[in-house]
Image 1 (cartoon, rainbow, N blue to C red):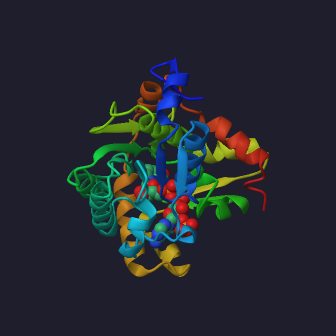
Image 2: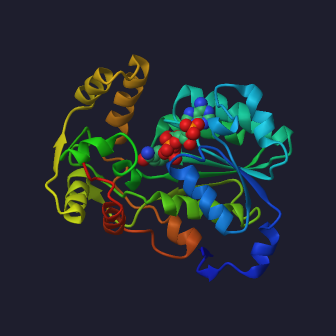
Length: 289
Ligand SMILES: NC(=O)c1ccc[n+]([C@@H]2O[C@H](COP(=O)([O-])OP(=O)(O)OC[C@H]3O[C@@H](n4cnc5c(N)ncnc54)[C@H](OP(=O)(O)O)[C@@H]3O)[C@@H](O)[C@H]2O)c1
């Protein structure tokens, strides 16, 4: 169980949160599924938000039904928090949530992504008791999502050069989100930056995965433009390709090559290490062709 400032969560805190219902968007995704799991473990009542549950970010008429009666919400916008669509939708949903009495809102944002700031501002302007969790690059990008296929076939082609990133395990993001949700107003009005414990290049990360799987793996850095051309070849729409090319060019330029200590500050323990992530995912057969 998570601890705050090194103190174990007490029965009293669990008591306080027992009647709290949290609506978790992206509940089938990388972070949302772990937030839902960690919230249940902490004694919160979880209401899952995804299209299968009738919630659609692109259809505002589905929002009130999803939110009504909840006390708090975890907001994660699909694909990227820095897209103009995210800014509009997060702002509008946050205002609607506040109108329905769902005041405690926690947004997943991105460390170092300037284009995410308007989305964060839209949340702040909603009148909510907000907390923003700015995360580093996820370790699970290597195990869940578009990078997996390449790794299964022995090569990761990616526009990250030799930049160093402090990959964070999404389970740590979930633990931080749940600690925030169970701490009353303690983190309201705060931006929290979270990263893993170590800087690694993508080449080093791929080498760790190779070590864990016992297989041969290569990392091939390419330009963001070349990567975008490949995405377009796989049928990714042109506007999404342009957005991702811009995003990777800016985000993977070294600006995020530093550690943030949010996990230790909030949970009172070190973040999970990439080596452990790689070993566990390899043992689960994630990268078997
Ligand atoms: N990847 C990183 O390294 C990183 C780092 C920092 C921040 N971020 C931010 O993290 C966010 C992505 O989070 P994630 O990786 O946890 O998500 P994810 O795994 O990509 O999952 C996306 C979730 O959104 C749901 N979804 C997709 N389209 C939807 C729609 N139209 N309406 C309702 N739900 C929809 C999906 O559920 P269904 O398909 O079941 O509906 C799924 O649960 C982005 O905002 C990104 O900017 C990412």
